Image (cartoon, rainbow, N blue to C red):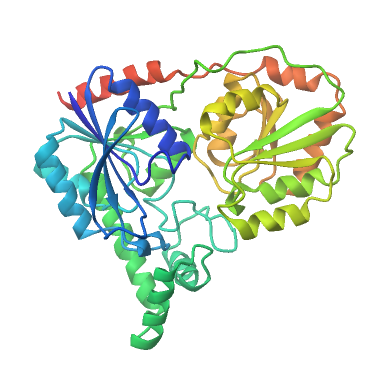
Length: 428
């Protein structure tokens, strides 16, 4: 079987959850099938839409250098040039099945093109991008959660983010200046664009044979969006379990809390730092792992906020040492202020025998049974988080109780067999 995986970004530069999972799945399926990965990358010194071929640990990869303006929120979801490249790839590679992992920087018309070639399409949903053009986070510029999609509100969010985005580049600055002097788009224009985008996203779902949702919350969200219930199944991620062992945890008077992930505002690290500032330093310490250079202004703000001497910024770590880091952590904190999906870090913590404190919304809350395998707090509420942490450090038995409640985690081998079965069903 020949399998084509499509994703927005990929390793080694990008190591978020979708990229890591796609790598694990493609590696597992490549043991028995021919696999090709198709993704994009920013390269300032290369011509846009340059097609390059490379390998990532023996996986065949087709990489396209995308235009820089594609990093702007709300940019067109249909790129004609990418559609041409995709069509050529289908002709050359001749995949039996196409597994979409993300269509950001690509085109919503890929499923329609695949249908013309009579190739079945499966789509694993990693976020809410089909419903939200602002990087799929359902989170406004002011960090307010969009519980309901309001296209007029979407237009205002995207329209504002053109000028005030933290991702402002020379390319996006050029577009802002061009709009100022050649006829600026109005909010009404943006609303019309959001209505059109929403309609195109729904049309794309009609040409997708099967959706996979790694969390029940995400599945329900997309059913509300318009995906038929019989076209979307729940199936959580699989993981490389080989690096993890359930070692007996140290019993210490000082509990070590950890954060592992992207140091960005939507991850809620500021909520965690603020909550930790009020805790007694002799009872708890916080180790924050993540690259501080990706969003330097936010990182500087966090360091200024961190008044407790028990807060330590440990910097970036490669994904292959996460298991070792978790061995030294007593409890992981996932304080994201958006819905998330099915965070890889929570599963990785469970693999290491580490319970989790997390926000009480979205896919995070799906994974945590409060006071069984972790603790829940009110999203974006540092006082609520501080109260939950205090409950833990003042109890002699709660941490052990949470450890005992940790559930098993699906291996990538098990997941690979599940996905392979789905491919064969689609192929009839």
